[in-house]
Length: 112
Length: 114
Image (cartoon, rainbow over all chains, first blue to last red; front, top):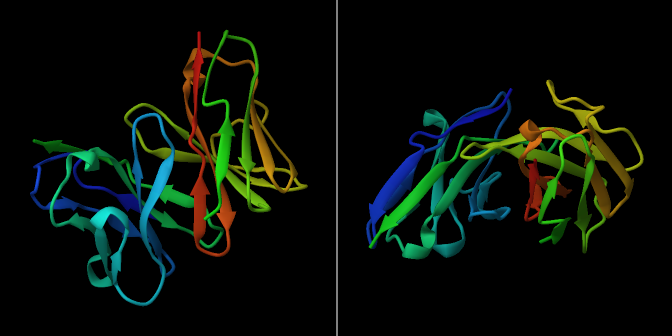
């Protein structure tokens, strides 16, 4: 079975500061891991994904995430936060049937 | 990536009526689509897997007679909320399976039942 835990339902950072959003997963098979961003009343936009290969994955808008099997983690980072990064972020794990299981989400606030 | 369009973007209906939400894959033939529901301030919960030409597969706890899914073509899946009640008010999002790893999401439909 697959599941995702996102630590911290709300994260606030100052503009220009490091963004770190935490995600831990549980999967009975090698995981496919994803980070999505959701702006108010909109669907989900893919930020990045890990399937196989390099464990450090770079995505859009300067975000990256590192798959750490030993820690069962897939934390999302960005070196310098922008005001436009304020949104809801979801970590997800995909099963073999291509069904996605999402974490509860982390709301990112960027303080000017 | 695939372009997925949902219609309507928002809908208000009276309690007891039915409402249909469409999910279209505009540039990709989708044999499999997924329907999710998202309550305010919560995550997305998978409701069902929609398979073209066959019956949908529902997740545990989702009433198949209340949430009717039809996937009659490779580009269209519909979700009909029958006899809607205020507790059905939610944000409904569909996604399209592309290849082995990708899923592209629609922009969502905000349903309010009054």
